[in-house]
Length: 248
Image (tube, rainbow, N blue to C red; front, side, top):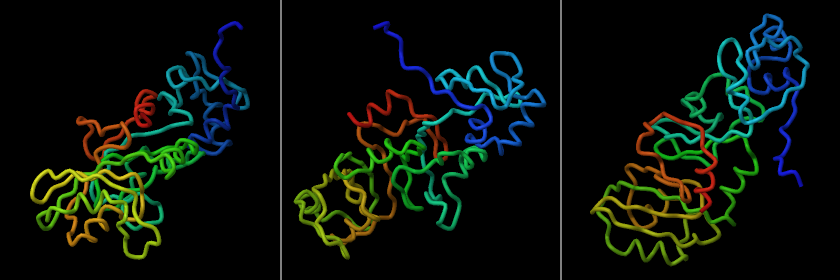
């Protein structure tokens, strides 16, 4: 064995840039013809040339004077703000509008890893990597999601036992919820840890014990915490170390 790492993926330049949202392959070819695609300081002349898609490529290739967007697979960590939806099909401003406009044309497309409703804030993952997405949302993985809920009425005291029992049935459901952990933070504030992702689950859990959620914030997924310095609406690329922490 020579100890060399895996060979980088080779891709046609026009297909790579088209998949990153820079335009159709014809439009990319026009960029190349104008000398606007530069690799290691030299303008590329052949839109059909194959190049190595290595981790350092965004630092070596520029398009119209700007560094290349990160190639797939790409995973983002976002602090989802209030009044923003997680689906292209829902009415209202979406989380995808907080990203560079070109990224909405990427292939494979970026998708949220699960969803937070319009009235929920906090940690949201966005990825174009299908295996990563399914690993996070799979019920078998039992990855904990931690929320802080602000409630309409004071906690009555027995919610923790009810949620931990693993017998709570939500209206319209055919199977009980998995056990969940409740940590009171105040009379009307609590931290709830769940391992499932059913529709509006946290809000429905508190409704089942006679309360109403006024505000909901997700602070962590698995071992990954929402960074304190990431403001609502801001995002950044998730590091390999953070991905590993998520599954720790």
